[in-house]
Image 1: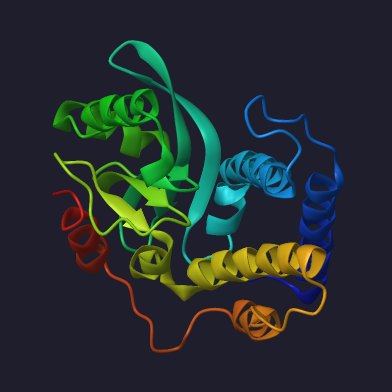
Image 2: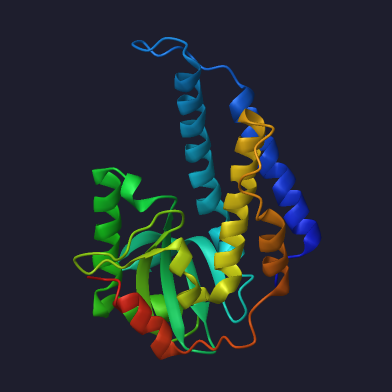
Amino acid sequence: MSFTAQELAKTANELRGEINRFLSQPTNPDVLLGNHPAVALASQKQGIAIWHGQRIEDHLADWINRVPGWTARARERITIASSIHEIDNLAWNPQIGVVLAVEAKRVWANQDGSSKADVRRKNKLYMDPANTPTITSHVGLSGASFRHFVFDVYGRTKTGSRGLPVIAGDKISHVFDHTLATYVEWERQVMANAIFEKIDPNSRHLKREHSLADESLSGTRSDFHSSRESVLDYIDKHAN
């Protein structure tokens, strides 16, 4: 099930409304820099980033569910090694026999040390072979292959490290085909346009919104064929 024109229009209106709300609300003066407009804009921009990061976490499973062959659930609670754990996004594809635990971060490089350490602890738990049967059977796919990775939605991370795969948004099509990648880029463009229109109404920059919407509505390319091997190989090569 792909996106519909009505859904994209509703989402665009919601995004523009939130951007306008953040850019219109007053900010407290910085103790060192006072009320300079640049300081206010920086504060508003940070507010947008925090809100949008939460939005991504809330909606990623919904977006994955639009990709043909994939099913996803957010904040899935599962008992592993006698303890209850919450998987941010649990996704699976019965056609190719793959189960994924996906952790979305708006920009991975901007995460603080404690956040990154927490993700690495989860990765160690998930990638223990003894825990794989529990996770795959949880979605009725005993014997399926399992992987965990960080989806660096708007970042540009080239690879992960120490066994943790990190896949940037512009490369996510290698896992979930171009449906999700195009939608993410469309949403980013809507927000960018809303910001530029607010601070510079005469700006002619960043106007790819409509063409990206058309791509999102078109669905999966007919020449795209995922396989268990291609998905797993791509994730694994981003682990080091």
